[in-house]
Image 1 (cartoon, rainbow, N blue to C red):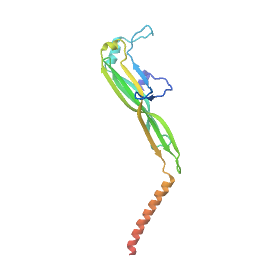
Image 2: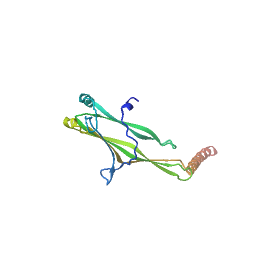
Image 3: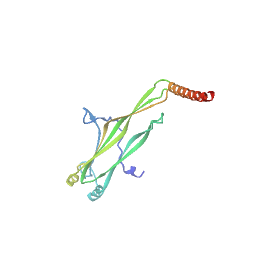
Image 4: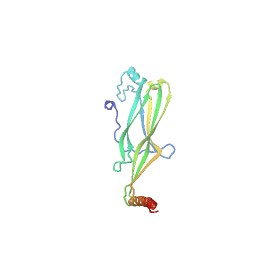
Length: 195
């Protein structure tokens, strides 16, 4: 509750994540974090450099992402909305690249009682994160170069969850099988006193 007041929210936009570097096409969301640098061109007014430095000596960067959890037992609502809280350290002495991968999750539901009635729904689900960082000269930082890059990409993974109701013919077959087994047991038990 306390940190949302100081957060920056990306406005809603319609954007498709596609492909990757090994495919012909790629689309991703790229966010770069720059230290504040006073500028007359765009009228930036930064805190004093000592204040900025103090935050970036032991600071951290946090990003909250919409995500889903899978609930295979609930046929009406197969997903649970969740939030991924991803955070990492930032510093003026190194550059960090944070790559966040989302996978395509397909939920296939067969809700037919007598015959197949398959419904498919697709969602994006958080898959994993990779962090890469390398040390660099602080002069890059004082020149106003990026200290962190965040990319949101599509993963190669496709998660498939399949759910189905028991069909009535399977229920009757199972029930008939149990009845046949009980009949055989009682028949065997009745043979002992008969002999």
